[in-house]
Image (cartoon, rainbow, N blue to C red; front, side, top):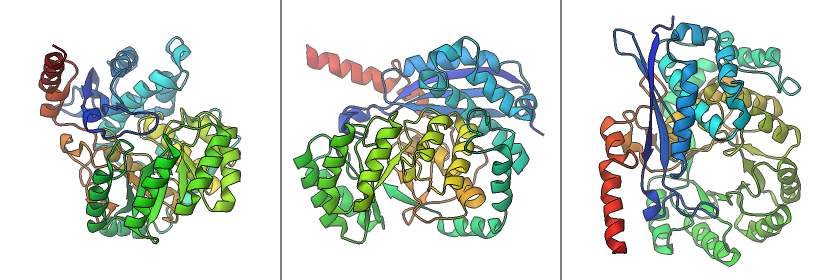
Length: 437
């Protein structure tokens, strides 16, 4: 049984200066500083039990998410963990439906990011204590607004059927891991020399799936895609990611000109909120054998429901910090199963790989039962700052061996990179001031 009263919640603004090396750069986010609002929930348990969670940001604005987390903390302090998880659906709805805070949401934007950070910490706390059966998992999901696509009874049937062959799939994952693809080779701000060196290194390490950032300049995209396709060869997979850069017709025309490089998908071709636009792009590109992938900027389960109903995507990309933590991702994974759309999560950033590995393993072992057209993003940045970093072997995510949500950061890293007073930031601010003088 879950134990411990929650006695405190702390949240810190942790930022890494990745923009200085153009790491993470794409057509819309040209200077990202990978960052996190990092939450620690302390309990009064005698063994010092604590939960760690985060939500991912790109630097500026992290302080706003921190304020939102602090505003939500009143719903946790003084409560017993067993009471929270005993009615997790009710607690989830309490966070997302706060009578006043929901006005600056609801279930989207800063409040949703803050909700993810808090709930990720709760899941880490709970996962360190006990296993979950199907009925417990269903009790975590808020089915409000999605019963026209997935009922609780249908979800339970999916989980029951997922029990068949589960042990064999568990053993398979322990031996082989879950297939991954790399985005680390082809950030938009990288030089051709960097692209060549990183692709060569990735090929030598056994990578066979590569994602390329596109969308800023068509001629440059053609040149870069040609370079990478020639390097990786015709048999390896290439995916494209425009990070919301284009209008609908522009996306169709642009990707049609890149079709010669045989990309598997185009990711976020237009506004992440434009469901019908994605549907039009998906329909137009289908004859070219190019699918549409999206989801990392989907606010909530309702948007995913409509993407699925509108046949607007062929690859569904959940995110461990954009949605309302595991609770909401469970609903989306089961809707994807019902609609027979493969889940290929977004990851990278700060801690996203550490978190999402748990979701993909659950999806394969307990929900989808299939690896067909499935893979998970991997970005080789900042894992050294986590106590239990993700393990990649033979271009696959290996099963984590520690209990919890793999979300605990090293205290020394937090102190050094806390913004703006951490040692690293004080040095960088001082250097910037010197250059301006």
